Amino acid sequence: MMNSNRSRLSSGWTFGHSVRRILAAGSALVLVGAFWAFDVSADVPSVTDLSTVDVEIIETGDIVEALAVPRGTRIRPGSRPRVRLPVYFEFNSADLKPEAKELLTKVGKALTTEDLEGYSFSVEGHTDSLGGERYNAALSSRRADAVKTYLASQGVPADRLEAVGLGEGSPVDSNSTTSGRQHNRRVEIINMGAES
Image 1: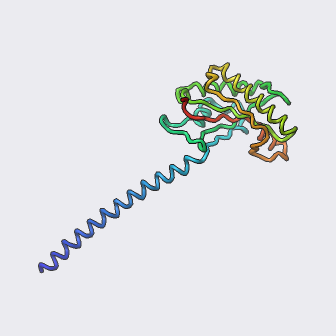
Image 2: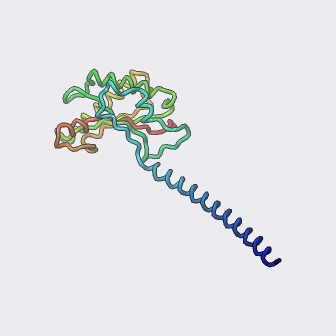
Image 3: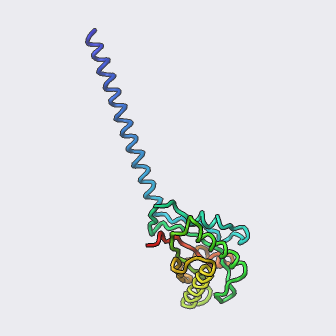
């Protein structure tokens, strides 16, 4: 009889000990899984594509939501939040169309909100492939500068903005169709992280 009680106690202790080991191992796996998932997602750029949305529908809050990150979050180079915008220019020019100014007014408000005030931003200009590569690079630079200038006129400190022209080198659609070329002619705003 004593043997069977000892066996029960021994089995109970072994069972309880095993459960604790399993729970501890499971918790460790969950933590490892959480860190693994975080690291993977941290290298995937967050792109909000509003380039095909009507300017009237886009709100300041949409832009803030696309570019904001929780305070204290380190923005890695490969995971910078960006928003693609339908910023329209006059043909072959860096002159902003009225609807572009309407949108950029909203962008200016977004970049000066409390959620985004401590960050710097890159303004990237992109073109389609019509015209020469050198011409498109220069045009995209002038357009990025025009957007930066307009945002500065809306109260965004110019030292928080960097204008970059990327020409035709980063298409997001086919350049063989009219709609594809329109999609490739765009401006992207990228959250570069907190100011140093």
